[in-house]
Amino acid sequence: GGVDIGSEEAVWWTITDDDGHQLSTIGSVRSMYDDSPVILQGDVYIEGVVTSIDNTWAGRVVVEDGTGALPIQLLSENRPVRGDVVLVNIGQGTLHESQGTLEVSQVKEYEKLGQDVIRVSGASLADLLTSPRRYASPTVQLVGVPFTQADGVTTLGGDRVVTDGSHTI
Image 1 (cartoon, rainbow, N blue to C red):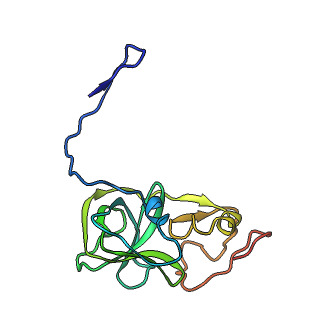
Image 2 (cartoon, rainbow, N blue to C red):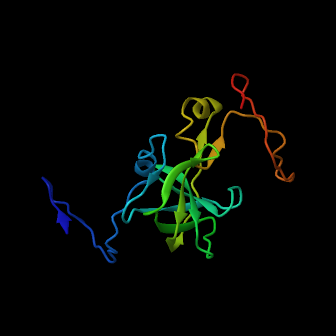
Image 3 (cartoon, rainbow, N blue to C red):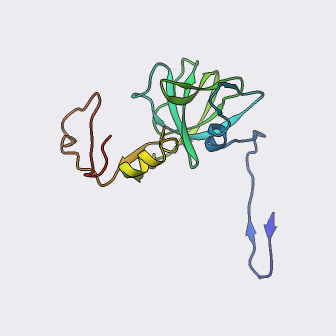
């Protein structure tokens, strides 16, 4: 197809592989939650990059798109790795809070589409405190926080307290 609106330039697109899946954004899926579990009816597909597999609890991976991130409990033995671009059918899964984090559980099917880099955005402690739902699952880099323990050599585990002089978490 092409577009020619008031100029002599045209833009052309070619769809080479239309799988017919109607995609939902992770942000729109997260907005369906209203403090009680939601069973996602029919086929509900999300597409994103797997950003976390190791620091999640049993059988969960975090999938992130440009609108947010969401932990997904996969029932499949075949597991994606960080950086995999996946198409996930979360239909028939349950959108609910578990241990204070919004997730979709009981997800049976996903497809690896390729690989991508994990994009990390910066966030201050004030950002985290004023918009907790926005930063509930995405990978972020804390800005404006001295963290001398993270020296690139020391393995860190457990909980850490960080402060920027005005805020502490």
